Length: 197
Image 1 (cartoon, one colour):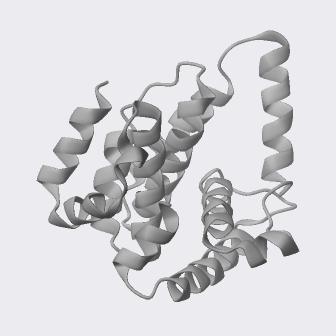
Image 2 (image 1 turned 120 degrees about the vertical axis):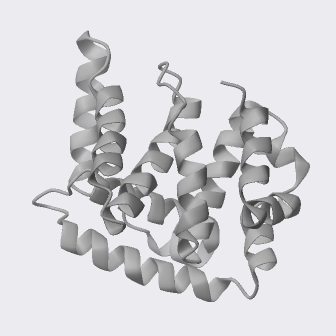
């Protein structure tokens, strides 16, 4: 998949996305990995600003990237798929929601032997909330930490939560974190410049 073509396609499909991409420094869209990371961050930024139509455009494009055991790419794609599932649930699009979750789960169960077992154990601990919460240092660090926190919350929620970290808890924390993040942006351009340094 040509990610430079994906950027151009998104620019053509949405004036809002095009305007955001103009503010993102060139270094953040110079390589294919940087494009995946930047588009995922942009999708979450737009989600915080309730621009869900543009979020879906970005996440739909990122959902076309196949899992190839490359977690440098896949971690970002996985977060985009989780966001796609979240928005699809809000929009009542059960098919897209289920497809997004299935793509995440397919990557989790791929492979065999010890790597698959380790991945399963790490995933179970994540679903129980390990590594999800902000620590006191991160709360003070600001937007980057809050963005990663939001990504983890949405992933956890999209995958159904667990007894230890319920859907209700995840939903409440998503709403609270979005509100805090929104307060950190004075303007859209300021928010983008804070995310893409």
